[in-house]
Length: 197
Length: 126
Image 1: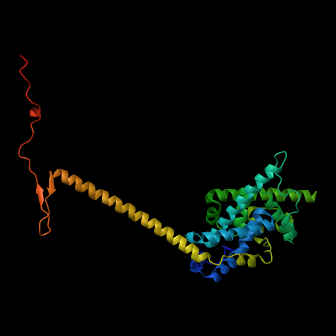
Image 2 (image 1 turned 45 degrees about the horizontal axis):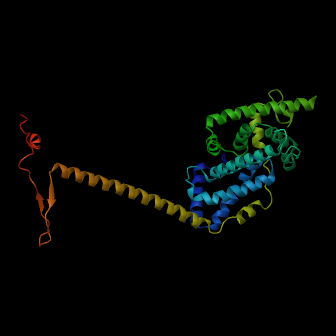
């Protein structure tokens, strides 16, 4: 799952199926191999989506917990990585909904304030200032645009794979990607103009 | 990111340049010990349990399908037999013979009932 631009996707899929068969046959070592192969990419996706390392870590744990209970239902139509991304993405959306409703209940004026005062976690995780600025611009995108950029450019998924993860047609995703790039361009341009004034 | 750092200033921030910059972004660091924590949370008895439950669900579905097909076939056989019996006229099975075989006895009606003669004749009203 780490990078779909590398390696042969068909071989990866065969390897995934063999791994799942071993897990279903009771091979604990195969479970550890699955975790080793996919936990980092899954964590990175969830971190970029929720921008909180502790929440991302919890979501990784929840994703694998769901995967163990649902692995027997894994059809093999997509790669295990895409399947795990889908579970993780749903976990993220569920957590967002719960979180939003809690904040809504707590706020007096009905305005949602999520992590308003917390420092940008990406800035603490990324040493490179330029990269941190791009990450910061990415965080300012609307959720549907940001998700496509995270999954396509940062995680290396194809539009067909992203379509399986988020349940949106590939054509719509391409359109969202173009919109996201336009938004990023505008944000970076504004930042540049502000700094050169 | 300053456009003059990573991009050519004249054609700054083209889609291709932004996409390239996104792909070059350094990956986020993975928290130390995450892999060990996820591995430690793997349930010991999970795979066998899952396989059993999945297999039993499949068997249940197969049995349900078979039972439905069998019931439908039985219904068809009974319906055909009943229809066939009605067409062939009334028949019954005679008493068992000493050799254990059955004889089908067929009643053949020799005289049809005249629907006009089922009531007694009317008395002469005069």
